[in-house]
Length: 163
Image (tube, rainbow, N blue to C red):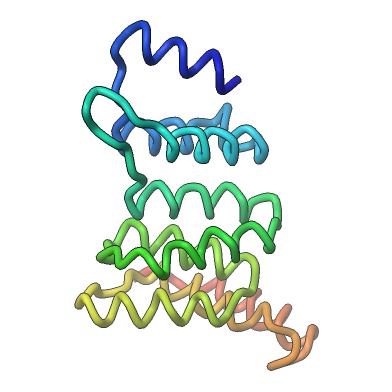
């Protein structure tokens, strides 16, 4: 895949932008194919050309983490997230929502709390849906509450009114 993409971009003078990478990572055809998404992300991150060096933005990383979390690939999620923490990105509401949803689904409490702290630091107010994902992340941790209590709490959270 990579050599064909390299040749295509070179022949047509295509310069990658983070918005295009985000579009590809969020597309239905790529979002459900973990290896393809991961390879595309890595390929895009290595591109140089047209006098510019491409670099991923926070949304690219958040979308990749979302794809990886859908397949429960916790090891890769942690690896990618470690990169994010060291990049010094400014948190946005869109990325916070994606990351918290992903970490909540995987029960990754420490990562979820890091994103929450970044949101507060940048004065980003959480939405109701985001709070549900935060709570879901805490209740996925069987060590804190036990499996039976987690099932009860998730059931209650999904029945809560939105307004």
